[in-house]
Length: 101
Image (cartoon, rainbow, N blue to C red; front, side, top):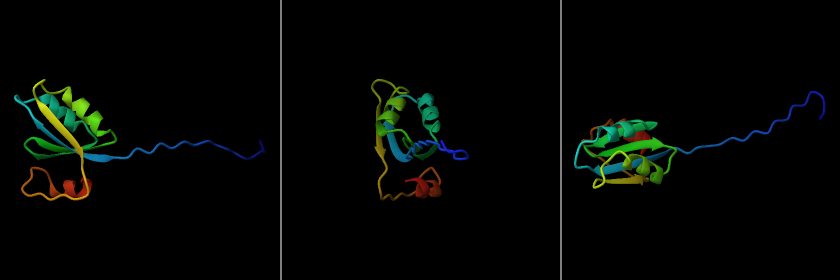
């Protein structure tokens, strides 16, 4: 190697942040579910049983993580947010939805 020349192999890993909409039906309140949702990088409580989270994880990963926090007969639905959205009278700030959906 030539004197004064520094070579470096750099591998950058880019992680894409996605926004997922989470909807669930639970028979009993599950505080663990709320804490798990709030553990994601960014989140919003949209309606009583609808949340949005921003994460590098896949929809399946989010589902599996949250499924462990609810009962066997409870249901959960996770979908990657799309290109268009509209809302009215939601629990969270409109700006969060504009910035993340």
